[in-house]
Length: 448
Image (cartoon, rainbow, N blue to C red):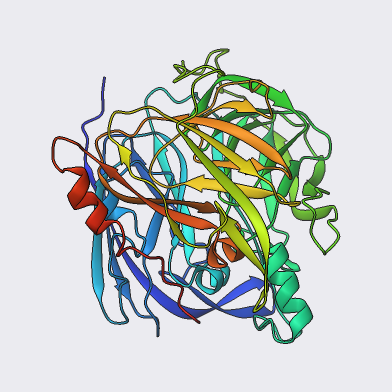
């Protein structure tokens, strides 16, 4: 029986507050409802979500709903919305079309606001979800704090250039706003663990001390079939859902990130984020089917490319380097017509990794460096390794307006690696009206 769709309402206040990340270690956080992360929003596919945001910060803010296929006016970027000024209220309201693990975060002065805690999880469930004994949400983050637990400011030249190049990686590792938390699970049980990489720039190579786990979903919800692995890379913006367990009573092990070299100045290392402790044996009712769902392919490998997007890094006299899309910063890309299949070749000609994020639409990766991918998935964020190319296919459904894509390393986005583009419905507007309007949307970056 289908659940009745309902309206799910939340009131949000963006505040500055003190937050204890570990006993005796308190930071001055910014966040929603004085929590870090903000509240985990839960609803069913088909429900209408209403979030009334009151901004009590000393600067403007707005909320982007990462991965949601919602109307352009609700996407929460300055291309579609006036930022919410201090003291103002804005109501976000939209239908949740898809089940999956999503998240929300500030899309204003992001380098500062996201690091300070303006983000949270959004879980959308459906009747067709597999049955588990329990569920946990893990928001991966880090902060760069000094010895007084204040956020560092990149002052003199070297750290500033390193931070611009690498993105800002912190030494304080957080899961759900806490340092090295204890995660408890009953022996014999299998839980759905939803991972969201909400950090500015950290690549997280999930590892459970070598124990096998099953990947069951990614950005756009369930995969077709579970995949058994011992590690999985989760880049900034990406989500991975796994089936964790069953484990043995009394054991305890690290939830860690293995070394991943994304060609940064700072050397990557293996790091522990949390400790898993397995409690007393309990019976299990979990059932994970062999087939989770069908994903219809949008196109095959030899589909004709409709657009090329090149990510690169170039020298800049002022800042040492610029982060470029098609050889320019903060660009306006060509419009896209509703109902016309998009086959984009996204290439990374730089010598470092970049996670490419498309707002408002899911895509399928149909080719990676000339090869078909191992499995089908709906994605909104995909990692591009150095000197690599991916082909993505996506269908602009009838949600006209201004959208964007960008590198989800927040500092690279701020430094220019982003583009706005218009999705238009030919029934409703001619090309001409479009060309006149696509130029006033320039992405303004606000000096903190």
